[in-house]
Length: 488
Image 1: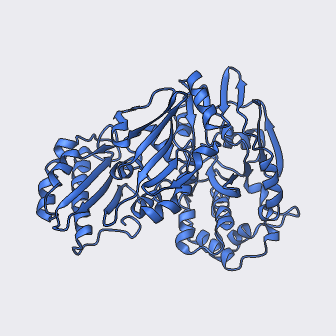
Image 2: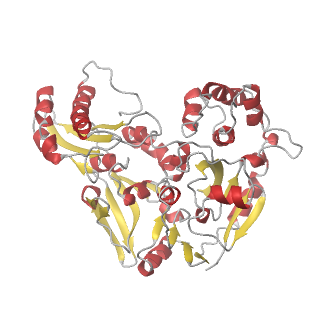
Image 3: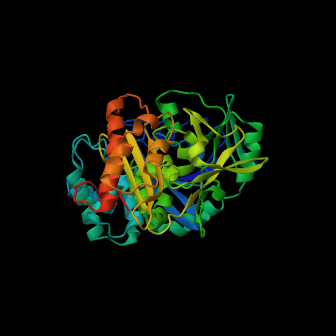
């Protein structure tokens, strides 16, 4: 057991023995290191002004990802490489090609958001050699420009990718082998505990260590991606003590594909899961593309989204529709719980205080299955769900509904199946008349609430109409409804 958090900041080795559990990376950079290029705009992971890169070893490779420093805790940085905008220019002051392209294309207006845009484009530079416009726009989903200057920024990204200069200009490409060696030296697998003025943070070295910690500390707050917990601190000012950071546990970051389905580790981020989901469940992958911005997808985890239990969490509805189960682990052993009965009531799940979500099992859809996931929001990208509907349908040779699973978020106190609607469809011929008749069962299944995202009446009508939309898209009727990434 050790008592220090160690990481690399730009080119410097950092070792911290005094860290508050809720100290954010943004505050550390600005207040303690005076690296003020990283800005605070929203303090909730929405605007991207605080974007930095965090490099970590994943599957034996060094991978850099854009993250929101405003909701990323220092306690989650052990064994990583943090890169800020100050690290990009050369020792002689020569701008990085991305920075120079922003100058050439007049990509900065008031300038406040500019460092965040630069860092998001830098993350794209490191991961994609020749990005097309869609890829560039996706990389910038999590960055907002109040001056509405997006077009020059996109042009800057296109310019630098079209005439990509030698990697000698780039500090991370130039020193990648050295950085990897330094990070490998930090991977000791030890559990780290730090106490600071009566507050305590713990970083387990393994899943077994985590189970032991929860047996002794059942009231501890587990933090994986902090995309939600971060707001508990920055917006609600909630004290958290002790805090257990689990994003560094390698066992929780694997995806295994078997004959029956996928086993996704609870620590797998949305970005990590994207490639596998796009191949196996494209409709689900389309939804993941609309979860937050790139920074949020690089931090947030599927297991955390489930364990948090929010009624508007994006991943539970499609997982429930797919028939997923969650594997819960404690020091006493493991147990599997079907996800549709895991959520009991608002803020309450079938999970004991000493248990944690270890993995999620997702059955592979059988051939001929019709799947769709729809997310309804006020704006298309980087917005919180008002209603999320997920549909899983198989038809018999005679056109009757053989199996159907329908689940919604935003319609109840928990993510919930539409059991009465399913019963009204099962065994019936898949026709518009059948669907319209089944819409009446929504009033049995759901009694949604009104909030600032949507009224109860809007939610109920939308949920019903999504079933009709699903019918139209699976029956081939002419319509102008879907975007290519939303429906398999």
